Length: 137
Image (cartoon, rainbow, N blue to C red):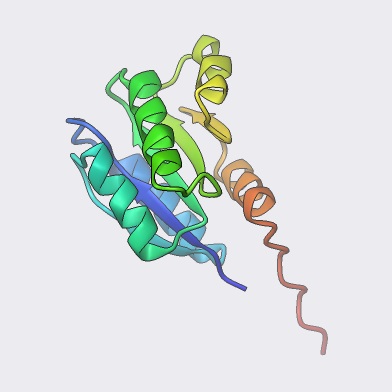
């Protein structure tokens, strides 16, 4: 079973290379990925998550506004009755802010340098995706 993941760049940050790498990695790992592009508004991210029926919203934030933007997306999903959609955040996030991000509702936080296989493993855990068994001849 494939789960849908929304990868979004909230706020004014225009750097999307990392988000695209994560989106491609998740796609290659079997997830169905919806990529919104850069400079997305929180209300647009929430509306897209609902419309696309995603299991996880992944926010890529490099601007330093990670605490406020994460809280606003989590609050927006809750207000829409979609508290079952997990929110994960990656980007330039100081380790000291990770507990605050989780307290704000982030299911997982991936600071710069997090290995891609760790992101895939965490996403599988959040969506209960079990890796396919290798085919036996």
